[in-house]
Image (tube, rainbow, N blue to C red; front, top):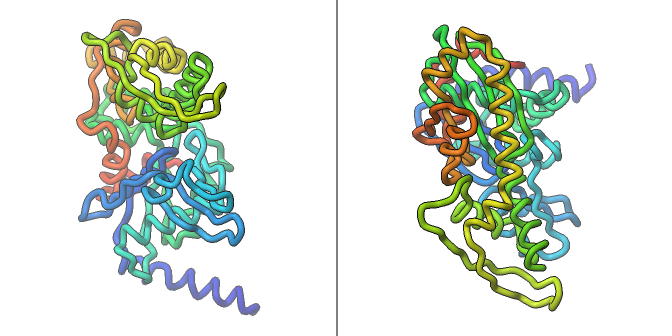
Length: 352
């Protein structure tokens, strides 16, 4: 037997033993943020999905919060990667390093760590993309890897009765994708993953400011604007914000003031696409479940649920009651975590 085969066989036999010393993990592998829940300890990692790589050596310089702080501030040889794009892996090698870092951090840097891992993914990713996620987790030394759909996890995390024969409509607006799903009896009756979400909104703000004011702003500034004054409908009291960037005409730093109506205009196309996706879901809902949705409304989850007045806009345009999950940012990882206690239910909802 070849030496590398011997090593591989030995490791495969050791995996079950190694997993005894590891806590099971639930991972919300998001485009913008990754959250890790350790069984028995709660959420132990909540950091940006960012990795700083030295392009000269290929070595990882920083991961998570530390890497995000470097965006726009690194020398030429260091590049900050967001290894996921639109909810799927864009850089296999960097994702593996990021997952390994977060898994080790969740286990407090212990070396003999081979946990069972459940990872949530967008509903419409391809088989190839699923395989990329699974392989990355195994390369990060997971003993077992199970994939589940983010929309289902968001519904579970929001406390919806997904196992009962009633319609549950959930809209999970993350960083890379917006997942709209109709769920009943532990199954997804209808789902759509829209690649319009937080990142697309940031880009829209950057382009709007560039076009209107000839001012170049970075991703972090655009995200701040979105969070602080972004809204879906007019606010009761108008708000303004000073933003800083580089003038494209003069080439020097410049500060301007924008108001909420301008940012609302910038965000309108993205928000309209999300509302349209909800309307399509309603049109494709079977009559019996449609009555349930009419009575119960829908639940918003994900960071996008925090956009001011988005719930009111959906209510006005879709004609539905809308409520926001108690902890929209963590709904997916909390839903995924519940499967750590019920592997029989996991087998029913897993997509791998």
